[in-house]
Amino acid sequence: MRLSSAGFNQQSPEGENRCLNSELWHACAGPLISLPAVGSRVVYFPQGHSEQVAASTNKEVDAHIPNYPSLPPQLICQLHNVTMHADVETDEVYAQMTLQPLSPQEQKEAFLPADLGVPSKQPTNYFCKTLTASDTSTHGGFSVPRRSAEKVFPPLDFSQQPPAQELIARDLHDNEWKFRHIFRGQPKRHLLTTGWSVFVSAKRLVAGDAVLFIWNENNQLFLGIRRANRPQTVMPSSVLSSDSMHLGLLAAAAHAAATNSRFTIFYNPRASPSEFVIPLTKYVKAVYHTLFRL
Image (cartoon, rainbow, N blue to C red):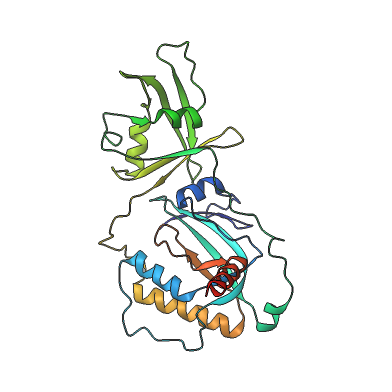
């Protein structure tokens, strides 16, 4: 699996230091996804992580996976690094995080939760549409809802007949895609024509997948995809077995907890809705709110 990566002071496979667009990454991840800030304190749940591995591999955990009695149900950690990734072949987004468990003494020390890192940035000017069969047809185009086109795309020149323009959008891998945006038909509607079928074929999109466009504050157009959840019947040979991944992540967490050493995890926001790394302030607030209600 080839990866396109971006993050804080991390080299990409091509040797260049390049950051993925945070707005586009978060839009592809989903509107409820928010990555903790680098340098902040978080709570890591090994069991929740294990459940996400089971969800992503479509396989239950076998009973012979050993237990780690010394591993607590949650670890209070400091987040040292967050790297946003996108799979080159599927555009699936995920994040790599470097965590370090805090000792009981470190947990008692005063800490300013928002003193470091870059906060997550969800887009404000974008639209997302689930593709229909006609949207993915090689003979058609992409039908854009009128309000969405007027909100996100540059304005058309209606003195032309028909009104049309060329749009240039970049994806997560900084690839450039060109589309002809035209306003035509009866009744009239916004369409992306020339270039659209090339994009659909290149990304292997099908009806049920979603495409999103973002117009940012620098007057740049970006596009991304959210693939529909489809059962994965055949796992690539390069992917470890579900048992191996469970064993590896639990062993790494147990070792880190015992030695207060750094360890690395991967978070796929589209694989499972459960969060297993949350800000400490959010966790404390939820716990106190629950106790108060009891």
